[in-house]
Image 1: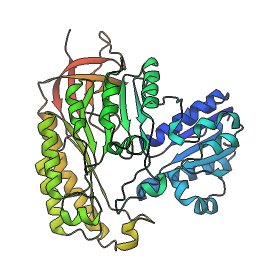
Image 2 (image 1 turned 60 degrees about the horizontal axis):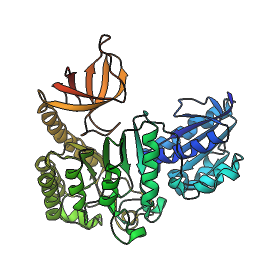
Image 3 (image 1 turned 180 degrees about the horizontal axis):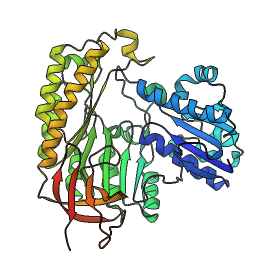
Length: 441
């Protein structure tokens, strides 16, 4: 047990990671040593930043809390604090069930946590949660996540995020640009722009959507090599954002846009405020206006009332769209949501799993064909790490941790530098990864 050390554990999404990084910077300023995502307690204090989005994520967070609670009982830890989405939703229940935790905080209780550990003087700029002025980067030093807003004004029937995060709140554009300039000065080259809902950026501050203007301004900053966009919404999509993608070489031709379903029956029940026809037109227009764009999406199966015909439409849509990146999950009823209050969770679990399996098998074939189509072609990659006998890199079509990677055989004679860009030729492919060799300069 190391004196004056705090172990931070981040569960869930990259937005939580940004919050953790902001907290870590404050405690380091106060003189603490901080570690991130240790398997077991190393210091006297642990802070777990939880996820409360869906059932699996909640279970994972609870298991992590229990693991550290056991360590505290065994004397391996003095204090245990829990914060984030899970404790925002279930604080009272968690306090009763896991008394080993010294204190539970919600998602935006950063100031109170700092004060608890004796840093009240340094807590003021943490009041706005994600809008802290400083961060400690826990990712590889060449890339970082930048959160441009918090909360969501959408009211999808199944989603608990607005219940946890509240209404959409954009960061001031100048603050975002200042943060990116600061990160560039630290050696960051690649920026994952994240939010619950990117396309709504600016509505609350400026009275209009400003996402295209924001990305245009970020792209002009010297040292910004790649910009990648996560979590757009299909309804009223700001097509001027596609103009910015075409305009700037450093804006990756990549968009993460969760579509959830395709049948009008399901889209209406989910309160998605779009239609099958509009969704097909959206995908078609994106591919036309940004040739070669990589589309990442997330789809849901087993939503209440989903019929065999609804699912068949979804499968046909996936076959037509040929998404470069796709994830899927089964419906999980979340307390407090519209669907939990108004619909019966009537699709049997075995049917949900069967549909999920079929959908992912369809996507696996598509992914394998897409990856194989790159064999013999050249690409620009950034190197993330050395792992065993391979350097692991990514093209602009892949986001860290979630997308296919490029495996390049390591060589003692010609070592590569992590965080640098290289030209490669794709030599082989699997379902979700490709192999490559460095092209001699």
